[in-house]
Image (cartoon, rainbow, N blue to C red; front, top):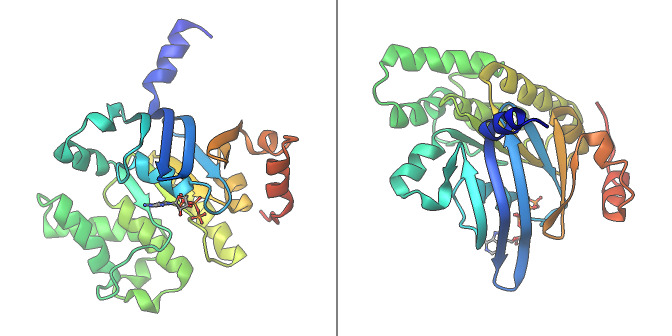
Length: 258
Ligand SMILES: Nc1ncnc2c1ncn2[C@@H]1O[C@H](COP(=O)(O)OP(=O)(O)OP(=O)(O)O)[C@@H](O)[C@H]1O
């Protein structure tokens, strides 16, 4: 590799983690993680329940502090940032929660309006309305604009959760179990939405899941997290060609549909 291509790659890293360790008292969750996510990449982190996937993305979002290691997000070392700077950085990071985290007492429109008015008070009412309509169109749910969250299906709630994050134009998206709790057909639709979002919004993403279909469909790279370390990192087929028993067991207990 030439010096020029090395420096281009370094410039394009949107997340750069070295030597990350995190424990909760005697529970050692992350035992030395290195991860680089390049601009435009969708990286999937796969692992069993309790393997530390959520802890990893909470640390990247600055919601949890690491015990050891350096974490640079969009070129900023998050450990060096004060609260204000962290808040500003978080605006560039979309966090798609497993639960969708919609406000039950607000309509879809109000759920989308809320983060926009709070974070971009300079926008006019018309600009806010246009942004809401655009993002709802992008997730295919413009017709639900006046509905309440409890009138929506699980898949629709996920889409509105994704829309609420997209409305702030994040540069990085952290998806926490985007297909969790959905039927297989709706899972496929959400996977396609994740890929569409990347193209349309020029985002880079970390997708944490134990859904193999999601990993295969959305990941440029798949990383297998087990026992606090990354066992393998690479294209889906390459990772699952591994003879490591923990990886083959994970593969064999999953049913893949695409
Ligand atoms: N704030 C916390 N305090 C104490 N223990 C925690 C905390 N957060 C996570 N843990 C523990 O860390 C381990 C990893 O949790 P994590 O939520 O990251 O798992 P996960 O891989 O995301 O699992 P799942 O797929 O079930 O969501 C678990 O044993 C969990 O109980």
